[in-house]
Image (cartoon, rainbow, N blue to C red):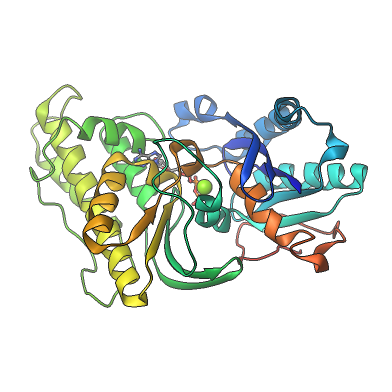
Length: 351
Ligand SMILES: Nc1ncnc2c1ncn2[C@@H]1O[C@H](COP(=O)(O)OP(=O)(O)OP(=O)(O)O)[C@@H](O)[C@H]1O
Ligand SMILES: [Mg+2]
């Protein structure tokens, strides 16, 4: 069973072909970062226009890489929400046209559910941390727009344990990076600068520390960095020690909360497996701390390799495999009324 996945929810145009929900035959991402960087954030209109330019060549490149023709695809999965509606629509309409032309089933899936289930993909190599997660597991999706903790009992069986009450962790990284004059998206630049800094140089606040609370809040730590910067005589320069110290101390405040709450939830739910995914799971300190805490708690942690942490279509194809026949025979017929939605529940997206 070979599924073509299509992803266009934000500023990455991506396509992938995944066999049997696990084996990646082709994976292509066209990033629009250079298009949006000069504006300091994603410009929705530019994103949609660029998806239109990129999407068909990206799909063709995947078919070429897998040495397949379109009619050898058994089904199509597309990210239909959440995200920027104009961007999502490009992927959804292209997916519908392709499904119609080859007369194969199409399902719309949830982008965040895709991030959550990305560790189910077969990946080797030193970058991804530890093999396939076993159900039930606790999953943290930590990305540009989400910081959500779930209990996952199987594909399609999720309960929300906690969520951010304000900024997503990735949003906080990007906003703090902007305050420091770093390029967009800033998470990776903070990660890099933090390597030279002292994580205990400044004690930034850790929100909602109560043991029974699995919600997050990152606006306080972000404001705290701003207050700290305002107190300085002049903005710190990237080559200065204090710049690296701010990055390392901010990063530590975010990572500590993410790791503590996730592993506390795992203990609370009595599960042996933890999944961490989404763009911020590319953070080197988060990966390091998660591995340390997992080892000391005798828990298996699963974090995808870096290219599967940020937006990609392999996670969409892998998830769609479970919502397409033969796994879900009831979805044999495509609903061509499928639409994009900025807000979306998990499961098969129908309208
Ligand atoms: N090494 C890193 N350290 C910290 N943050 C990072 C790192 N690499 C990427 N990020 C952050 O990940 C986010 C992008 O992740 P992703 O592409 O999953 O988000 P999104 O698709 O925009 O949001 P969502 O998935 O919630 O719709 C950005 O905020 C970016 O700064
Ligand atoms: Mg994403």
